Image 1 (tube, rainbow, N blue to C red):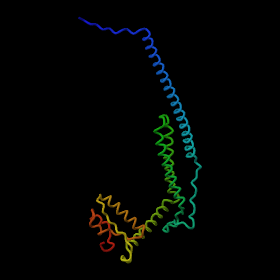
Image 2: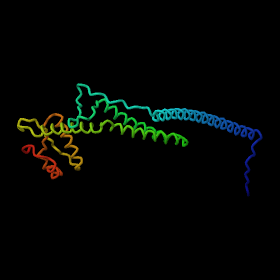
Image 3: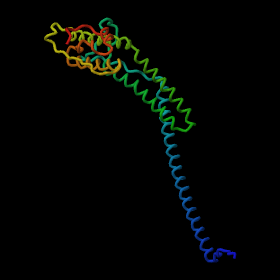
Image 4: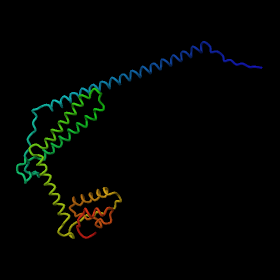
Length: 251
């Protein structure tokens, strides 16, 4: 005996309801897609507007930079005279050196540093600009490099480089003399000392850093620096023996 099973055909009403449901879903999806496209269009328009404004603003800045740099009538102000209470004095070995104030040197260095900062900023922003902006970027970069050259030459005009070298040498001599006085007192027994105990099991560079910290602390407090056990028990003691001088009995 054979059995056969046939599914009942959907009625006309059921088919109509299914078709309406599919149609409603399609309309809903179509509305969602239209809203998505409209949102994307608005966001794209806003981004394009911001890019246009940024491009215009940067172009105006580039024109200002180019105009200022190409002005051949710019003059570097003459250095100010040293104030009466200034610690900076002209080098005694050469009376022909021009006097420069501390404000002049600070301003010169700040100018050089700020030009570099602008250059770094332009390079960073260039990666976010359209490709057709390369011409303005290259022009600005060349102008900034030229300004850096001018700033570097400014550090040499009117014998300022020689004056700077003389002042640095005076400062070096002053610090060296102070170190000699602290490390070689007339009476070690009556002098205050800072004992540096290097207990760091690290490499030579690391140990030198810690010795440098001890030295800075001793110098700042006016104390004689003494290496614990004269540094003989430390790693790389042979190198420390070559670097140090005897300052007293072993501690």
